[in-house]
Length: 591
Image (tube, rainbow, N blue to C red; front, side):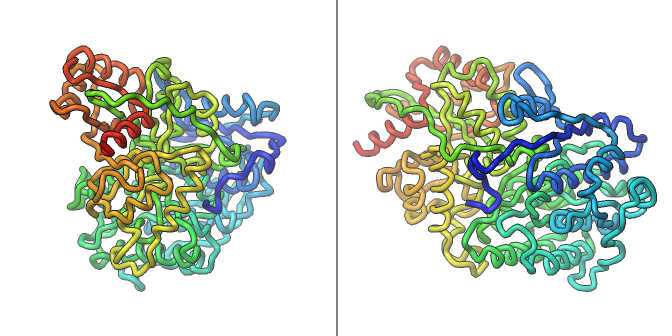
């Protein structure tokens, strides 16, 4: 397991006090200066990572999201849950002033690192430095600089990155900043050898660039920084394509971003000596860079860009915790990473075997939860839906997300119904392309990592009693060969759902089946959704169909099920829990 991972409850003591900082109120009371507001969120998230490193001391109120009956404060929701047990006797001190916050944590605030708005990659380099050195990030010549360096607490400037990078090394000031940070912090072993952070730099802070959007502080993913700073992760934002110049650095030689990304991942591999997978938080900022979407200015589609990035990670023993656009913001992970998970959790008792009949057996994969941000934000909506428990659901919650969101896993196991089942999502305990763990590995030169992948998954699966992998993605890299199937049979013995094909449908007793389609229900026309699903049914029975749905509520799924049975009765639908589905499919294959 990863070095940042979970200890048992015996290692934790409740803090003496929690500060709850109302970031929403703070932003509302700041001057109408979007630069200052961006800088304030970046500063507070960085401070949070520093002060929460050893114990939970600071939470923020910042994020709203979907609840069962409308929008709620996600931060209030989770703090209330924490106060029911773990933090039940801990006093909460509330504040909303930046000056008060810095004064309260004056012992931890030792100085600042100044980043250069002319080379916005230095905003990410500063985040790396914050985690290693414990300094706060401040933009040069900004209102915040004037407020806390020139005035207020008069924080000393420990390091300035201004005018430090001109492209003399790589032809790219952007990549020079990352290569310098690599040599100073990554190569010297000062960063976490099993954790990195891929979050957009301050590109959105340039009003002359396409996609300028100061207002969207949630999708700027600044609040996500706290966890990675607390755990000394290396931050970066680089394009994965070798065949195009990125829109944020049009003067660089072709492929410089790509080559720099490879250099970072290679150094990270050398730090952990190939003995562990690196978790990389974040996602390709496809709405602004590296794709052909809107202002991003590239030539590649968003999904292929995701897959190219995933492939590069896979070839370098790295997995994705994929904070993708929309639900990309995650607050308070550095606080709640201290939540005392139990050493083991148990799922429901396995259902009794059913007789195999001439039916259309259906499994709906309820995803995509390969991101702790998506999981933490969406639980109030999907899990607190009053319809949950009326029929079987296969919740595809990747177990490795417990590193950043342990509180979610404790909550769902404590409140699951007899119809709630947990399976792994995208590729297992982490999103990668398993085909790239063997062979040439995109020319990376790294040795085979398939046995390491088995070991990594076994640890996570055993902790949460997983034995089914709902969706394995291989992107551009073809059907799964027998050797990789055999590896999955070691840790996912009860079944594997596939994006692409495979060599054999049954391997050492483990059934493999390909998804038939992604389904996107329209809540105002569930009959049409059922009709779309029914198109995949065939006259021959029994048949086994896996559909993938993303961020859907049980209420919606129930409506779809009702329409399937009422509108298409000839198909003889049977909605299955994942264990029954794969058990019946295995017996079908054996016969």
